[in-house]
Image (cartoon, rainbow, N blue to C red):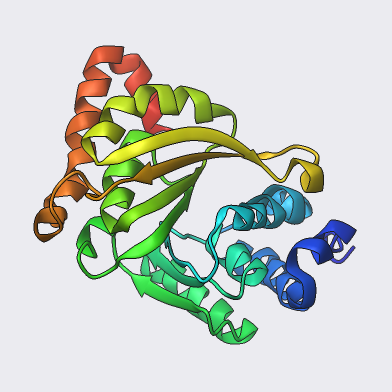
Length: 250
């Protein structure tokens, strides 16, 4: 234990293999620079491995070989950096709109020597048509119906979005079915991942798209990024203002 930081658990080697030293260094950066800059709370430091790094890394088992991935609203690099460490064959773009966070991400990528990771500053709706990937990931970014409006238009045909949602996964999915259908999704489900490794699995909402990610033709996909917002307004109206306030706080 160093300044409240737990040592890497044995299961971390199973997930990261030869990249374990890089994963250890990443948690050190989160617990020091990341905490100083407000990306990680002080109370989160003792549980960085279990609650954050490993919790994110296990979704790597859902990725196809040599996939391209965009981590929307990457923040401190979760889940994008743990996935990149666990799967060096996957090309990861960390998409983050806030400058101070992109500075941190660039420092981490540079220090860890992550050749399979690129940092891009911007919002998802601003990069539609510029970013096109096999997989979109997100963690604690927005309610699912809104996240789908941002993330699905970034996918290539037949790609998938993986949203880490915890205990809210089933309810958010139930509330978002209309939005998902309008945005070109063809399949959606909640998948528990990493139970054998973690004990308590990571709850992931997996959304697959068909030929038209975003629900429109490729030449018009920029407009699809806004579709989730209009669907969200309809959902809030149907469920009442009180529930809307709770959803906005997630």
